[in-house]
Image (cartoon, rainbow, N blue to C red):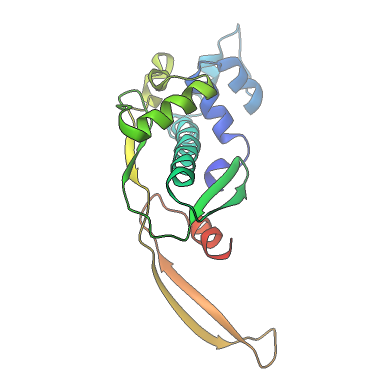
Length: 188
């Protein structure tokens, strides 16, 4: 959810599609003489890359969701602001899933899923090479579909409800993983 707040993925998609005027309108940026790119550059590369990465994460989530629905009978969906996260209670084989970018090889089953998804989105992998703002171009990467969660559970007296216990969860996640996803998976 953190990555998708506001219009982050929408702005990322607009950047990739070179819809710079749309980016300026969505972010309420001021521009002069239709120079939208210069107005956008003032935001800084770190924030602009964040927008691109947000859209890539949306595409990755959709790709994994399609894959899980195809391969696992016991899946369930949980709402999030851009659609549905898909989870399964079955033992899932961990694989690397591409994060689409201009150098991503769209091969195998994930490549086929991405091709259909990108077509539906009206975007090509080459669109992530943003010549007008080269610094935010994204060549792509990959990420494990499953991340190990190291969790400790402790029970203690609940201060709010007499004679009840509460569970205190502590867990560590690898970089790029989000606690909100762990909570959604646990409490679907």
